Length: 386
Image (cartoon, rainbow, N blue to C red; front, side, top):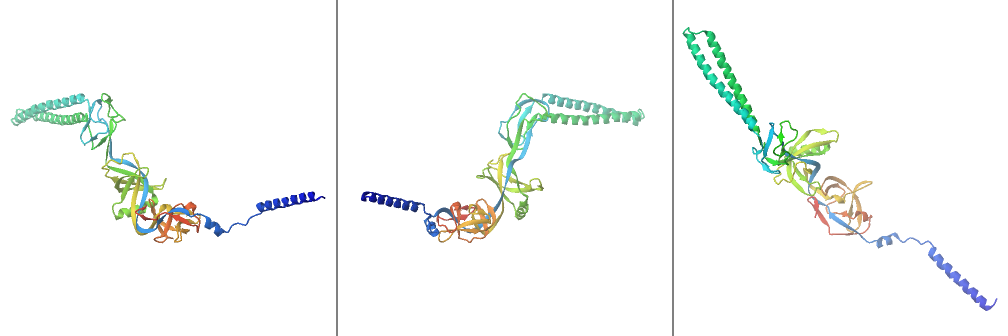
């Protein structure tokens, strides 16, 4: 082999050796980095926290309810006739006794006049019969008349007196019919939509009403709670009036505050709930009949208890727990026991100490012993973190 060929062969062998070394370095398994080093390289998890504090916590129960007017009446005619005029405006507030509509009264007035005339006729006949009776008695005393004539005259007088009493009843009936032609408001309230227009014939037997009158001040709220809350409600009522706050359907705006009036006398076995009724002054008309509301009942106030925001409480396979932030700004999970819950506030009975920092947001980023970066801590007060 010539020197040139030998040199070329050596160059090729050297190139293959270098390529094989590089390939092995790329494909060879690498040992995992130290866990402590990897943990140190993980950035702190950002979280929001709150400080567990001791305070007085109100305990509420909330149920779905409906608003009911304290007085609802259908405005109807009590006599048959033509609706002559309607004297209210739809949505108008009226007072008890205000005339709302008029029925044509002419037929009823004629019947009343006829009854009065008949009574006058019988009164005149009675006067003549009483004079005849007096003469018959005088003649009988002088033996110019018989007792039979006296008895006949007495019977006639008694009949006429009975007729006059019947006339008076007929007059009262006819007067009532005339009075019914003026349809009046049976109470204060607000009139709804007019359902019958003037000129239509209305009857006392009609299924439909001319309008509906409702009294919304005060108003009532009928709502339900789980039957297991019955003892708590009864105990609260034994201590005094129980406050109820009505919220809108979104549970974001208070519509009024009232008091529980009564608890229904039976528990619904179908739903295992108890029905309650609360009364609200409703001076600002925030509660409207038929409206759905959330009724929040103040059952009791727990004094000097440890409380945290409800979103700090987590549920895991082993039960309830919360993430806390240690003094070294590391995360630690802590099993806890809770008492009552109200709004965004939960009472913790064991597992936490006053002043400890609990995580309220960002829990999904946490691992035990991992570093965290926290926002400014907030205390828990009055059911809301501040």
